[in-house]
Amino acid sequence: MSSPQADGPMIPWWIGPERSKLRVAVGTVQAALDRSSAGVEAGAASELPQVVHAWRELVSLLALGAEPVMRACPHCGQTGMAAASRCGGCWSRLEPEAVPAA
Image 1 (cartoon, helix red, strand yellow):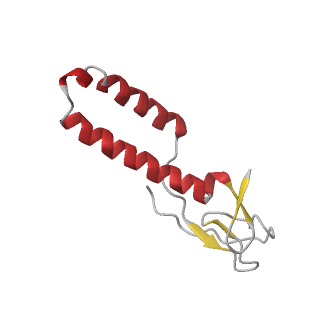
Image 2 (cartoon, helix red, strand yellow):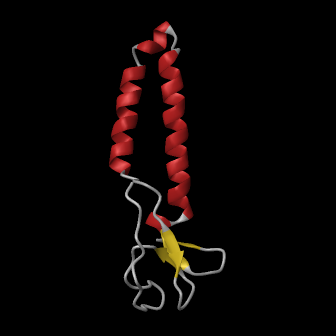
């Protein structure tokens, strides 16, 4: 399963725009849960820990990690991971770029 880029090449789902949107959505829900924890109503207070636990388990299972560092192939221009040693489009040998530690 891949996603088309604006210029046409296909990129894998794990580095595509859907994955980036998922990271943003996870952050948004986490921020809402953090705010809710501070000011919950008495009736909902007993359910909030279960929701928070379920959310943490879901985030753990998603294992999104940090947004990958990307670069364009100097030979064909296809976007790929900066740490790649070969282009996924033209298979040219690449010098892997240093990727900052997360």
